[in-house]
Length: 336
Length: 238
Image (spheres, rainbow over the protein chains, first blue to last red):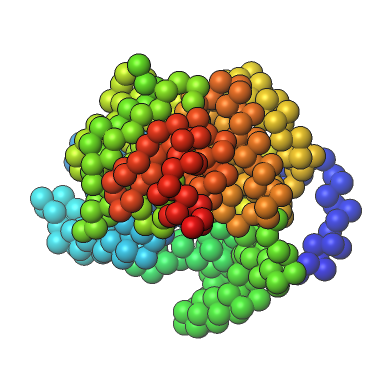
């Protein structure tokens, strides 16, 4: 892997802007020669990158376990569907609420449990994901459609154009993906981003430095969950059929794996992770029954060979690799 | 009026009654040392002042304002910084990044941050030489300097140091205490917790001796250095 990286070194000399423009152009052009199936695969890939990036705020930046992320994804989709089916709100107009409502739920749910440490927090989030799924299955207030979910949601309409073909949806999702990446990069380098980094590294020290750690962690949850709601909204717009399966535990696990396998805290990592967890299994559909085995094996191999993920953020790589080197160097490094 | 005034402070660690009515005062511009054996409650006192632990009873007043019960992150903003025990720096962040963290409460005030950084680098030229190095690669003494420098970035009026000499070579201990005196000369009030009682009393104006959660003795540092009991119990003399 590192050899490959060295081999790619000359490519690093190309200015970053060229890369960005080139990749964006490629992303726009790629679906044109492809058929609808592959266009849908591309759409799915971009959607899961958004989901991965949204979870990355919570897991990567703020360093908290969240294994119930799919619940907020489902909440975003259901918000859009319910507004559309019962109140006749066009899909495009339901976007703000599809973002706000999951964020609100995240606030209510995580506020009382923020003081929990890693593994305990993780258990509570798993439970929350399952609770949301069961509530949806049990047809809350008779509006969630039970186990069958909700169907025949109106297709989104943009300036009179009904978005039906997969390629339109791909471009919509691509637009939001670019927006997400831009936002994440800004967030990473913002004051809040730094606060998250300090909280992740050492909570007590962060608190002693004047950071409101509860507030910082809460913001990570609310922002990440709202973003997942956005992905849910995108999903509802394309599929027009949604079911409680959106909040399945496996969905949360896939999102978590995207973040961890790709590289915690890293934006390109979410791309690589999605490729491995979503796109490849989709393309090798005949082998799909083997997917769970593939996930398991790749997890074990990764943890042994590359614990920091495929495309880690430099910081996390230093943390994981550095510890080993420090441990080796410790005996010859006396204090003082 | 005293800058920091603690009255009848009681703190629990779970079921352990760690502070049993501590009274303490620090005047503006002073260096005050808090000495005592392991488990006497020195660190607990500091952690209670900085808001990391909530007192069960008693009041802490800083500059006329009650700060007991105020969350830690707000206390930093009021001008109280703590240098935690055991050099808790962020080993994967560079020296500059560690310092920026200390200036978190200043927000986006770039000018003030730059000014503080300048002051801190003047105080610790060694850190400027290593500003792009990772915290974890610094020597023990440099790491201790970095924790002090980081706390100074918040422009504190009261700087609280917890065992700054812990685990350092004697020569470095001397340097650290000289630095403490220098910081004080710049107008920062200092509350120092130390097991190295002799060094701590030498640098301080006044001192308090803590034993199992009580203040058993207090007074001018020079007087304490001469005191029979202190000499026996803490300075290792017969």
